[in-house]
Image (cartoon, rainbow, N blue to C red):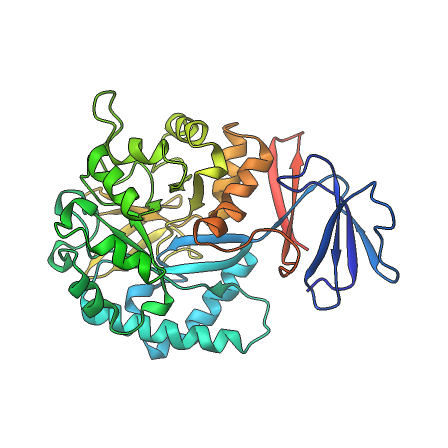
Length: 386
């Protein structure tokens, strides 16, 4: 952990000029000041020269389904050592925090997983280890549209209602941060306001909602879209659909998988430009359990997925997800020349935090920094932890 140090000549997203970052003895950001600020060096502080490179907080992954071979929907008490290993692995992949994502499964599996994660989060609060933190849980389902279920098992899908949510959460609502749902299935108009009242983000996804239905959901409090473009109606010039309604709504954040397979780079650029980059978009990995392992065939509930070059598919060819870490998406956006470097970094570090109400790089935050270096000679973006 960085302590009693001043980082100089740092580029920081949101600042026009190079900055100094003062880090106190507790490892917290004390202040961010311009290089020309008078008396900006604290006596006794060591100096670290970023030499004009970008400095950011670590990434936050709001949609990751497992790691090192463990699917989060399958987690049991015996897997707690593996969960610690996953947190260590993600830390070394530049991830400060993440939301374990439970895809559609049985209610019993969801309840067991929530109970284990709640206890694990309490354990992490007592630790001072340098590893990635579980920030809560993302439930991707089971309130999804059968016609857009993708790889989710149909037998476990449920119709959304307040009663069904209370049954599903079973008293663990305090750790649930996001629930992905299809808003057109809620005929009561009670579910999204209920989630908002509990501090849970309603994210629209795996849905057939049209623009009118999506706008209604956003007006009721939904503030997110799950993996934009995937498992929803496509953009159409006469039928903009769920995504079209989200793109023009300044209060909505869209999750985006930038692996090159889930969404064509041309459509990514369209989404980024129309949604003002990190002001309306955040990157997710949507990584499946084999992240951290090699290509191959792996179990996935009662089925199997085949991973090739970081892309996972079911036996019938259905795209199931990826095994590429979050920050690969940042590197891809720069490599594909879809947005400026600072915006790309913010899409993986700042905007996910803001999407769930967490502060970005600012005074009082832990100084868990990444240093980003653009190498012109091979047109590659690299990062390392400080």
